[in-house]
Image (tube, rainbow, N blue to C red; front, top):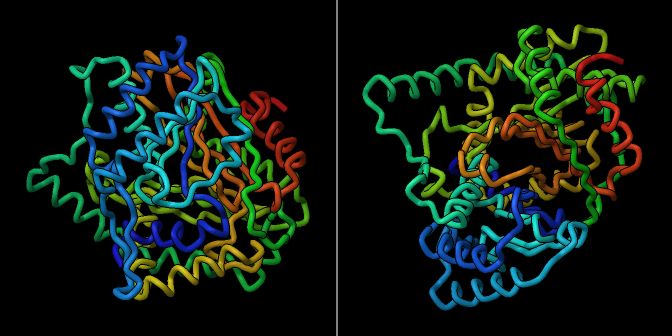
Length: 425
């Protein structure tokens, strides 16, 4: 099974149970929305880009799935459906409860909340978070009618040494893989499930679409102060926030010894691709575990070295290589999603998923976007962060059937307060 199909098999196998398949970006514009321009730019974007006409075709008899295209008739019907939706306004809670199975909508779609706010969704089977950012900037280019400033992301025309560098990175990632697995399993120990910080408190997941989200934002001055603090500690912003999250979770659950955070990584540096033409969820996740009683900052720096060594890439490749049967993999994913968190494998019993989409530097987005928040319906607590125009934005999402929303939000209100992030408390 190909690496790009591994995540797709998860969504196809579990979407009916988890009621989730779309990444979402809540975009607040600096100026009032022109609905007519939005409809025109959206339609043009879909018609000019084959990837945004994607549907998923399953072949159970061949034990695989692949990406196809909607027919012209299907495309016309779906565009008409999306255009009717764009003429309406929806509240964000209603949008959060929506669930459309794969192939019932175009993989990239928009809903209007108010005269400044839109929610953009993209099928997670087709793309990852960085690709969603790419398509948002393409939409805004169409909306601004300024195609001369388009910033297409094509795979590099690599010379020999660049190609050699990519191959060497992949080779080294596989050399480090047995070291990582041995280290992870030995540190997890026999009581990994019993020792883990789990804010669901061992609840069994149910078939549900009952989610809650909360947004956090930081102005330019506070964001700059955080960056200066990170520089003083010789940490990246992602590393520093990870440290704050681990400390906060340990303080909240004092009787547990282990925290596991899943952190996705875009695999572009290991396998260059173009968001415009490449199908699939091109991410790999690092399961990072932390232990009480040891210096958290040193643990964080040690964990992030595995990123530099490419372990998420080689770990995902290993998982793809041993997943010989597509149908069996779907069943395994489904069985895993139905288990309480402590009963999952030591590599999958996540206390939290933290995804940083990094600095969004597309000029058209900096011109038009006032704020942007990303979310996805995950079974673990999910925190997604990004920075645009020098301001840091985060969004937290949880399943209300697995977690007590008031408790989780109160905890993260404290962890993500500027006082706590600046370690002033």
